[in-house]
Amino acid sequence: MAAKWTRPRGVIIVPDYCLPGVFWDIRDSLERNPGWSELSGAMAAFDPGDSFNSIRPSVPGTGFLILLAPGQVSIGPRSECF
Image 1 (cartoon, one colour):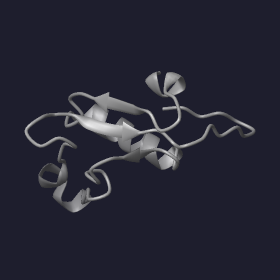
Image 2 (image 1 turned 135 degrees about the vertical axis):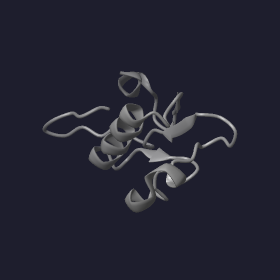
Image 3 (image 1 turned 90 degrees about the vertical axis):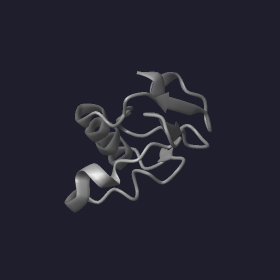
């Protein structure tokens, strides 16, 4: 829901993203919405063969993941937000 209200180039801080449900929801949402990115590269470095070792937070020592909104609003035939 926060993605709908985030301004271009705004950020969303996701707590507890290391919980499996939150992790997979964010990962799937980033795949469906390529304009969005995760600031530290933690999601890009994810290795499905090493699931527990590769889940790293954006901010070391926390459970936070920081997402960056695209630089412009994209309008298409069907709007998808996280």
